[in-house]
Image 1 (cartoon, helix red, strand yellow):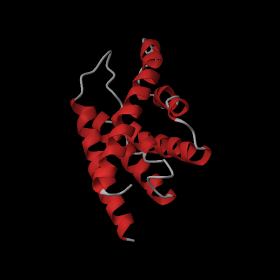
Image 2 (cartoon, rainbow, N blue to C red; image 1 turned 30 degrees about the horizontal axis):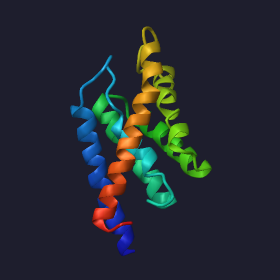
Image 3 (cartoon, one colour; image 1 turned 135 degrees about the horizontal axis):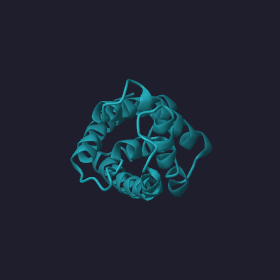
Length: 151
């Protein structure tokens, strides 16, 4: 019980930090490093959290992403929850889970939230951006969790 509360508090603070880093990071072709989505994928690791914590964290990360980007409610939250579920259920590795980033752009395009024209370069660049963001977030989450005594 005590460890669950500490993990929850740690993940909330980490999510706020990731949202700030994503919002303040420089954009290339209108794309920034997707730290919020990367945190949702990193916290779906079995060693960091339970199933309930994974799904609540992914939905909260999606809600924060919706508010940062000005999307309608649950546009990102539904995709983040589905991606975190897939990563946790099938124990996907980091390079494989980075395929969720271009799928996220396709998801947004399907719902009409991003334009289809000229997004091909964004679509191609978003997977490496996601891989870099996931690696950075995984390293920082692991280091901070060890410092906090959660690992």
